[in-house]
Length: 357
Image 1: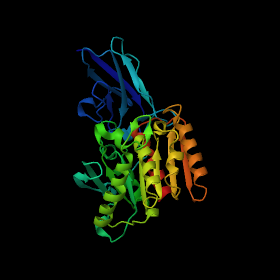
Image 2: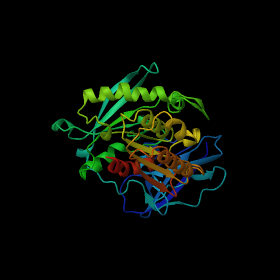
Image 3: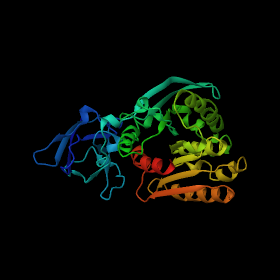
Image 4: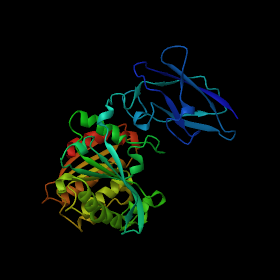
């Protein structure tokens, strides 16, 4: 079993612990066994890795305890993975100058109250069940206020620091927002369906992935889940107070939901949407409804793929052209260095919420 030592040089103005996650530990973040130790000089850190005998090349990233606190590039952009060949000498240290979440300060008393509504919420439209959780404002039970609601896809990746693909850090973002007076909303987190995620999040029309179950899934959100949430929590149920969002395929299905059910949602949060699945989506869906009238927050990174931003801009143009009689409002944010990951979407989350609501 080869032993390899990583050396890291970083600033000394951040007292959070440093961890490494990579292909050698299945990208599990913030594991005690992969916490770096201080070196001999300030700003120097090190760790010795025991690698599998059959490992030829490793990829990894450093974090300050979660994907919402991952290393960033020199200009604050998402950093590429580090890579090293096991057979070569590891003498050159890694260097990190910026960290995500370094400016995110929150107090624990502002953290939302996370309530698991059901570990197996019934989805009659698909004859399945799903874990659904509500992130309630920190003072929800101390007031009689009614709140807007944002329904978010891929609940596993929204607030769990140990999520396999990273976390948006929504709970921490909401805490920071609440402290500055902008976090008064309920977030409903719907877990994805694991191996059936692709089918549930793609259109029920012929597309590059076949014919999906998107319409049935959107029907569940609008006709089953939303009435339950409105009945059991103090919500503001009108469309202008109801949003839906997600990233990647979760962004795509959120668009489907908004266009299938314009009477339910007036607020769409669409991050890095997988429009490549169906490039002519706007025209086909707008034949079903020309009634969507609300606000759409679009975000995408140019480092995600060559087609991400062009597809987003084409989508915006087509929706606006086909909905001339509607009062649509778009905000489109493009990060020239943005990559396809949860940490970046978490960073965009508060900006999107504050604009949408």
